[in-house]
Image 1 (cartoon, rainbow, N blue to C red):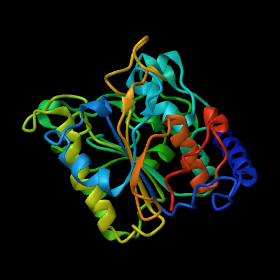
Image 2: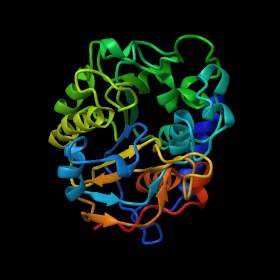
Image 3: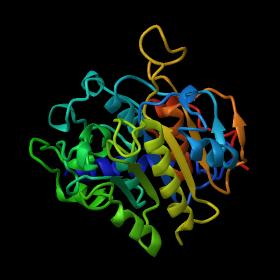
Length: 322
């Protein structure tokens, strides 16, 4: 009953929200969206040595935002802010879903209510909707639930999050990218290659090595590890039969290294890289101030959804579109 109520509310919000094609929004209608999340990197840390793909290919072939900011420290608060427009102190403490779940509007529930397909893809997650940590970096398969925001919402994972996994609905939508073999993304890549079952919204989280959180061999450089992931998966996405003129890729980081109280100019989450790739985008550099709440609002407008949390009072990212 709880999920039916949430779906009904989300559907009602979707009905009254402005259509993304209307001039009032300024955001085009999206066919497929891919959000790829990296870890703990400030824009100033990118160099041609450690971020060859990001600076050499993504930057000239994207809308490259130079004043994008995380919301908070630490990880979970940014992932939750990015998908629900708010966060709690327990998210700042990176607590697990068992002690830090919420029944609040979020983009996953909004998409479900609007009948729009979605999946949260988690590299090295042992099985769908896994609510606890698994794997180790030395084996190239470290999964940490703190980077999996879908598992923190009751309308996705269910109300009892005390076990190892959430409910069946969550297991169908919050899924592994592949097996727990080192850096395996075979399920995700096979889905892209087939093209027929690619959801319209894809939230992509690499494992603890490939997202740049931890220093892992053989790359041995956190920024390069995520850069290598992007070099492989952006190409796979763009080569997919599902990719079309209305598809977009958002490359975003949870937080930067230059945040913290008294350090960050706008938010304690730090000043991070941010790029948007696709035919809908006018490739250029943009100096407008944006953050995770603006990203959420943009995604909601692009799918014609209602607004979760602070997205309701945030402006969408509009200046980048053709």
